[in-house]
Image (tube, rainbow, N blue to C red):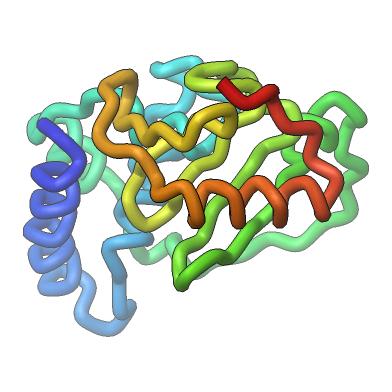
Length: 168
């Protein structure tokens, strides 16, 4: 199932969840959050964005959604917790907005592909190689950013203190 099929299925599943829990205003993002929590350990992911790089079958989605009590989705627990330094470093990230697009660069991303660091283009689920502007879904080259946009992203990242890879 590719990303578009995944999102189509999430939209489809959200209809049944909203019918079952009409007073909760469940959104597709809620379903994705539940799936992320359910599968990050299975995929041994350290970052939530890595979730989208893995295959989940419709049967696995169905199993999680059917067995989850969405009445708990809005419950929040607040407590004082000191984040260990290793985790704090891992989650250090920079958000860049460019031409209406949002890019996230994790300063200590566990996955060095396609460059170290690289940007995550949120709306398209693509990883951007910051050495050449090539865009990847999983490990497949999909497109390349325009020279102008690539230069703007690198300039903004540099201004925010991101140590960028050499241009290739």
